[in-house]
Length: 207
Image (cartoon, rainbow, N blue to C red):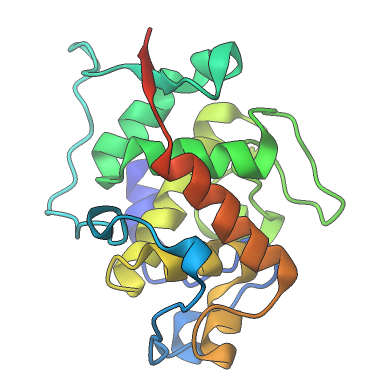
């Protein structure tokens, strides 16, 4: 997936798990603060910092800093560490967030295919993958870069709010819009909770 293709598609609004809608049809909702105490995480983690342009791809000739995997991921995550780190650097995302999403979406099974057709480590739906320029969602590098791009896109849309970013990644931004916040779907509620548990409790293990 070329960077030019990603940049050209930055205005697309796509749902990951449930739907795919163009941005013109999905105005930003009036965000509401989630009330569930179990979702409360440290304030410093609740908002993803905005990106600083321009995005800069890590120099392939330079070693990646802090090449680590979460302790709870173990050896299953090791093959993807470099790609996750590059995606985190380029899209200016916490690597812990990418790891947590991968854990909940696929448990590091790069060939995973859900009953709904979501594919790969970050479980990209075919329409989503096509819209963001992922040609082969079962290719780990393409999948991680595509999933990270989509997370960054949603984080920008929701002013870095991690709750709404994750809700839209799972249920689609249209569902977030219709419900004026986090949709009351048990799947989405549990998804956010599980991702945040891993995100908050990530203790890195150097490779």
